[in-house]
Image 1 (cartoon, rainbow over the protein chains, first blue to last red):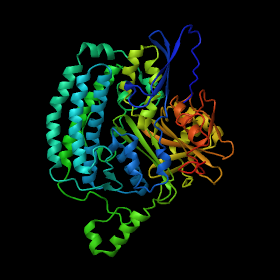
Image 2 (cartoon, rainbow over the protein chains, first blue to last red):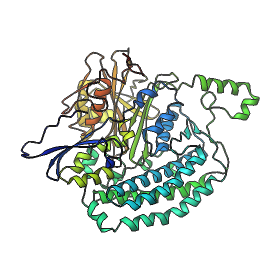
Image 3 (cartoon, chains in turn brown, green):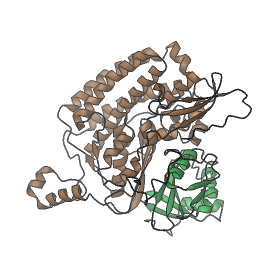
Image 4 (cartoon, rainbow over the protein chains, first blue to last red):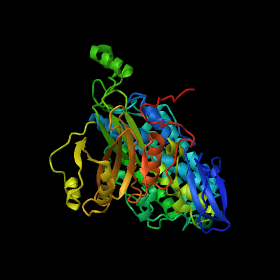
Length: 399
Length: 160
């Protein structure tokens, strides 16, 4: 977070301007130090760390189960994707198999999370570029998704609904009808947004050809998610390294080759349609009843009924909540596809009930590194489009 | 810690050694994930080969993460999580560094994305990367003292 900026050589009259950390279009507390030649951005340098809360360090002081609550707070627009990445990593460490029913519910809810996150992205991105009404519509639909989350987990945002070995609670009766109602209604809403934007002349002028990031540069900079797919690279963790039974679902990976902000917009909108497809399939797959947690005494809390009749179950329950459980020593790296790209959880176990090290590979952090590539040479006004199209969550950037 | 050195030939190690026989790498596997342990001075050479060799093509560096094994020496391990987009394979590259003056050569020329990852490790672990063009703190304030993710740094910080 230094304030010194070396000006580019040869630039005779440039001005250094500080954008953020308090700026409405920086989506949180991002600060970009700009070097400007008139309206043209000569150099852009993102300065981060304003939201650093030491989540990785805090995880080391908590048991494996307790740390789940921190993963929600990393990416607060897609808490369930982060829950899933962390739980899958710990399950891999333990060698635990999760029941199919829980896997399908996980898939359904992470896809709803993707819709939720893309809606916020679309709303705020459009608002940054002057289309305020889109934001109001997007938040209307997002509200319904949050209500579904609240129904299953009791929380709108920091859900912590996925637990090691399965789910926290049995979803309440009637929740699938609510999901069905939402996904029946949503395609027409998606069309409304597209009517407002896709062929809107102002929208096209603000996004077409803006913030070019070619495949070669994107791969070199480690950019993942919709930004990479808008450059024509069909890398999606769900297809490359399927987890949580994603291999059983049929869906496409939308890609574009234009590499600009508009392509990224189209990719994300197409992704919302694919997510709907997955949610539909998941609804058909979820069996009406069955276990939602793996059977692993000493690791997964026993069922309430068993605790009333079995001595061991009561002992395990007590031990799990006082001491936690200890996975074997080792380390795993688990990738999942979050709305922003590849989320990776690198967890090191030393055989104690607390993780020795939790490292989060945050897609926002890596994608933000490409901002200078997007913005340099463009106008200040286009920088807003570039930040919006990167879809960063500062909680995830700074952790 | 859990690396069980395997004497069985590993295809990735074989390819590396076919390209340059001086490369020493010990392969181990845990939960289906392959780890190669290298001596730190061979990191740059191995990274170049991993990126460029036709049978390897690890073009995507997902992540770099350090682990502090205090009080064991060598104290730090640095893990590179690699991915090959054309071949759909993954690999973890690991080097061990001493607790006293931990220095490692940068991999920015091979994977430019390493820039911020290396800055983060410098910031939180105090490991320096030689040849890094812009090595200064990234998440913590510039005037911060100490390296928060080291194991001898208390979770609640140092109180005055």
